[in-house]
Image (cartoon, rainbow, N blue to C red; front, top):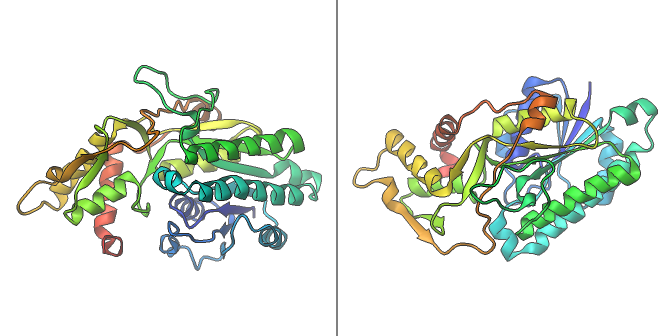
Length: 336
């Protein structure tokens, strides 16, 4: 039985990955998470008592804590998801992003390398350090620009994306210099159940249900490539199992949508599911001053992961959005 160490498993994508891996594999799963404001252990209630799931409340910047965990569980792979990820917060408090995303990745790499180099030949060959990153490291696109590929230059424009770019470079450097076997994935915007309501989709859903204004930056024409989280975590597994050591794989939903269209679609779905008695949800939409360094467009070319790992997204945006809205309506603890 393979043992997989997942960092950030109490987060949105991490918890989705752990639930998926428990259901679809025989892996033993070790969740390392310090459970910050965005961590949600409720997202793991369905697996918390599973015999193949273990939780270690540890900061990835804690060298001694990581060494103990590696010695205790002796993992066959690391999937590194732990990160600060909200662009607005990175503008206000960039130091937290440098500490977690850069220093934390360095600390985890060091612990992984020291563990890996002591293993026998077979385990060294099969070991993987899978670093999960973002398409934001590539900067922004204009309307006519082709989608990002794995060869796109790094041009990060926010403290968040700069910190993730730095972590990507560290992972590559440890592969090239120390030969630890790594793979990197850069993914587009995720959405789905259990996402912390600071991100556009859950924030819009919950504010609409409470009758609050639905704020949209600028004129709302900024474009993102959206992917349903269940599709992303399946891609993570396939890259871990089939990806080529030292390679990067871009993962996208093939679904470019403007921010204002996302908000309007949510309003339409809510109007169908829980109509307001005296007004329309879209009447709550307001446009606010654009945030600093707001990238105009992201788009991902996922051909490489399709060809090499056999992955394609299965969830179209409207059906994924309906499932997401339905989940937030059902999860009354989130709404309250």
